[in-house]
Image (cartoon, rainbow, N blue to C red; front, side):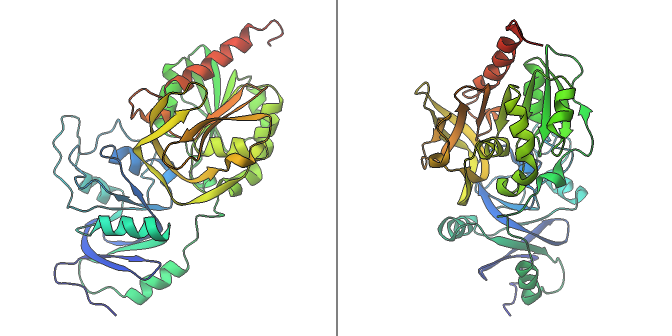
Length: 376
């Protein structure tokens, strides 16, 4: 069994047997999850609290993490979502007027394990070349880790493919995010980010957030002007087992429907399209996406491990956006129904406002339908 160097207080073990030694940060203990990498230079707090990262350990390729500290306004969910964190350098001391605590104290407060002082470039190359795989962080502080035991933990860890995680992060019961607004929007919560809710509210939405298993009948009883399908974690094929009948009944009713990320993938599957798992996913804040309807290129924020197969889209669904990195699908629109979606995260504002127009389109669709003579 490999022995840790003198400075090591933590290790990272990969499913392929690779072992990294480093220094533990955050809480002591062990955490397991799918390893992924994010190339963003900012936004670590938003990333770590994004429910779409449930069950994943995030490798930040940017070396300086912690310099903006933690504040109470930029948290994207009710809890710390990611399974763990990997960074190159030790946590930087906070230097920002908005900070209320350090990243280190926040990790301990949330009982999260992390590791630093490892070669994140090498780790990212392994994930790029071999594809996504599970890993385990063990912050031992004192004593020596049992690598064989950690590998046993890895062997029993679930694979993200075929895993439904939306039920683990959805709201347990409906709630009102905002009680005033011109348009009543029902948000199906597969793991919704708070900034999406803020964007919908700022656009004039009166928001009711419901669990992901809420029936179409119950949603329509709420008399919404539109329905939003949120982002979320896990395999869309697994979530689709209960989500598709709900979405299909909503779209057949003529209800305006708008989806982001997992919501986009589920909407595509509801029309008969297929999704597959990417080798290592799209995660970062500088991904160029081409709008095929306007010809414009948008700088987008992305966080997804699964993607819609463009060739599987039916004839009545149009591909509206594609990634300029690999040509993969980034958006769709139905030809006759008031339904559309995007794969990327327009609310994250990396452009900064390149993709905000999709929210405008959603609200314009609701207004246009309200103006129709036979509108309820």
